[in-house]
Length: 435
Image (cartoon, rainbow, N blue to C red):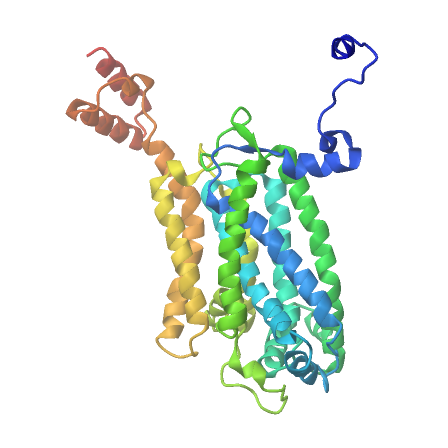
């Protein structure tokens, strides 16, 4: 009888939703991650976004711990890194995690950008622009961190890259002296770079939150590039499982770099202390800057090479305005898929060329590949337009069986459209529709 009375008790508390939906503070995180509606057809390429978040956390934590033992002074910086590797408990692992974490960061970034280019994610312009801001901030952060060990390649890499400021008209030389804090790369330069390297990640975290805010406001793109409001599933458990699998794969490769072959993506010259009196034969940046470095050295003119190199990076800002297709994803554009993979191939080849000595045949190969890199970016909107024109035909043609008559009709129709005989093409279509 007690159970029956409670069933009809109007004063009993009403059932409420889960606590994550009622707590105002937790609800913000819940709507952004746990119950976030996501398109049902996202593939593995979307996991690189969450891997970038993992990379950022790893770099922040490892960098914070390393800063407790690092000394930003030109006479002690190199020795402090050696001290971390030899004397600090698990210091070798901590340093390898931070050094190789930057490489993993850029692997994930380049995969993330490639996915955005292939599936048309750049049409969410605000999200895309904040993503490009993050890419540039990450490049700046990586360059600043590369100089801190104060090895031979760190010193001369900083000298070469900062010298690019001198090509800026009027104020270039003054900016260069201000960045150096003297007449050459010196102790003041190292202290400034260390301060910026410590502060810049906090700016990156703020931009990451803006990037995610605008992404979640409109929703993620999907491989087909179509509206997916009616085909969504919650982020958990459908995509947390996929992301966890991505983390496992990421961890296997990352731990191989950290524990087995930590210098696979590094440069052995950085194990020599910085020597301003001895210039290395080949001054080159880390591998993730090699494509831009290869473009830089392909242009004989100093200022021209610097401008073209920066154009190869900031061209990402122009990508949304260059889209001319009716559809968003390249799934519907076989011709553009070829152009996309040519772009990827030229990027990888330029990275390889950048690591080669500055001599023939690498110089001419770098020039050819630079032309291919920019040509594939410019051909993309043109091929989108051409493919849309090729597939433009009267609606009645859809219901006709695909046979020789269908191909004959389509060939004549396209030929008339190509020579700007719109009326003749319309008459031909009307004639064939009555057949």
